Figure 1 (cartoon, one colour):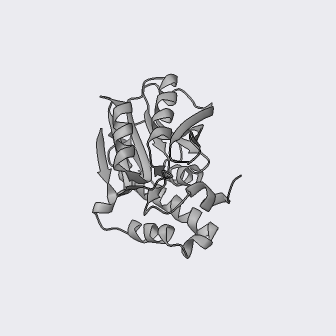
Figure 2 (spheres, one colour):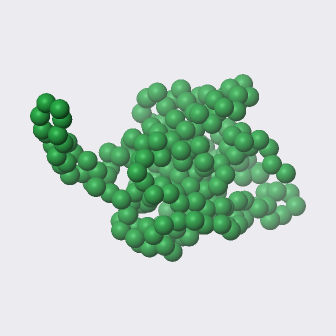
Length: 219
């Protein structure tokens, strides 16, 4: 698995990342969602550079020319609910893509809330056979949700290649995903990779619970 850390290069995405991490900016739920969406758009643009291209003939009002177009059939898949604004950012760029969704949520398995399991229930996906599968989920903390989502989507077919995109990842989560994908053609894209997690398995410094910041706290 190849890992690309986009925080290693300076771009406008630094501003979006600074705002979603800022506890004061987080009070504006609309701005937070919009910045997650913007990061998705930026990452989709970066991923587009890795696709397969062929010339397409275009007729303009004044002439003709060939313009390279990507030929990949794309499926954009996301983990509910935190992934929805991130997913929308990708869909704004890959507007002809098919879409897939899965519910995967963490469950604390001990009283102290220091051990985490992952539970999946709902999945809606087209076949990914021979297609470029892009799985998007803002937080790659323990890696359990992403590994479970990857395995679930592969039950619908064998993709041509897989891109996994997250806003923030951890080395532990990346290691778990790397073990899950084994020798498959997978590239992991991170807007940032943070040092680790706290005792409750939240990324530090991170920015908190993405789903709650987007849509409000849950029971």
